[in-house]
Picture 1 (cartoon, rainbow over the protein chains, first blue to last red):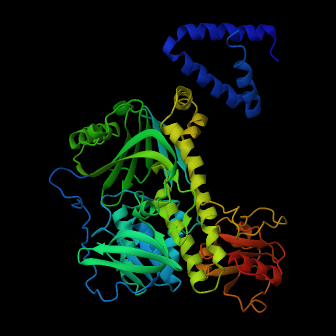
Picture 2 (picture 1 turned 135 degrees about the vertical axis):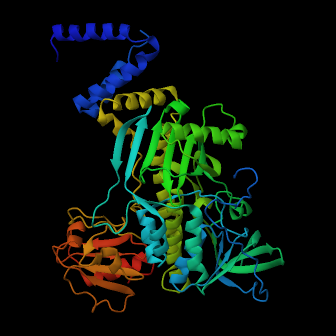
Picture 3 (picture 1 turned 90 degrees about the vertical axis):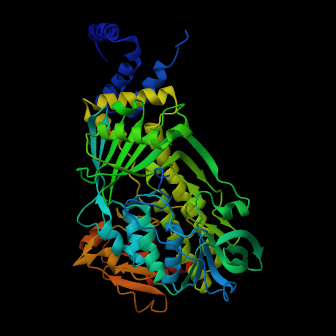
Length: 60
Length: 535
């Protein structure tokens, strides 16, 4: 688990990066990021869980 | 299709022969053990494989020459083994271009270079490029030398009726019509099979969205025999292009049509010329070129539910249509031909039970379904069907520009020969083995002194042992015995000890293996491999 401070750093970096990317390229950026992080994590089952978890509550 | 002013078989580099219908008419209606409809690569191979077993066949083809155009151009390693066993591989080796390397590009930048498995212990390279006319020519040259094959050109089959222990064909050629009774019929008449239609059978499966034009051009292009795949290139945004080198300075350009691109427009000569010119610019070729031939196809996965219909067996494209980029259309067709030929020959000769023929569909349809799984994955990468697949494909390619690991997603799936695990005539594996090929797999290759393991195979079944002397107690069986050294390269590849043995079928698939062999179990496995009655 990350420290709250580290998580906040990531949160801010993502917000700034998303704003810096043209709206039409944000999906591509996010998909690349998933592949990159997945490769570092090297745990396909954990990534599949995260994919399912992130898909929850999208209409909340 | 060919450029305006050139006939269908007016090629820049190949002289199509002309075949007359049979001149000698008196014996056309003589009953045949086996009739084969379609003298394309698959029908020719089936006729040769039957002749090798001593079986006569009548080979019928509606055309007066070979198929037009280069069509299937990639021949896989296992197909060279099939040709080798038919004694026909010589001219193929001389003319074709072997290759091991593929490169993938995304928007003009290389993102992947892959090597197909190869090593000095392999007799043949993983893939060879050769235009289909040459494939047909070389097979035909072997057929023409073979007295057991009665080849009849310009001979169209117009009817197939079930008859007592066989089928009755109605055949028409320019000189007349006749009936031909055959005990067995092999339908090798291609994707639009006449026999399939006459039997009222239908292919089932999926049509993918992607449509591709394949165009052959002749040019002095200086690039090695390396398969190139161009994803999302400048000249065709959103599309995929494949470039293959063939003999005679012929290059295959295979490009995807855009959604909504009109098919009739896409195959007009001026459209093809403009599209090809744009691809050549993309790959940096600025010299002269001639347009040779072009065609259009879509990525389908279609197959018959059963490759057998009574006394009729479907082999090759008449039984299954697979996407072209898996390079398994021709290759699986040749394996179909070899598979049915050795089985049918033994049934006809009374050396096997008729149930042996029931193993044809599970083995060869299984191979087709395996191709479907792999080809569907390739198709989804080359032609993403939905927004989600498109986004992930684009993300993988884009990431691959900076991170090579992502380029691996662009690797076309290696098509290895299918393992007949669920075949009724393949024995369960011996769990005592640690490694090596399981029963149903093809025999791997190894160097044995000055030759290769495959060179030692007999014409039919072969028993490979590593010290155990089994020939004496099994001399009544139609088996070639090969004794190999323990601790040799072959023993290593086969994970074999001095007590081990492998029973190899005529098609190089492994029928059974034993870590500690005894003659009785070999006898049982041999009989079961031929669907015979075991004691």
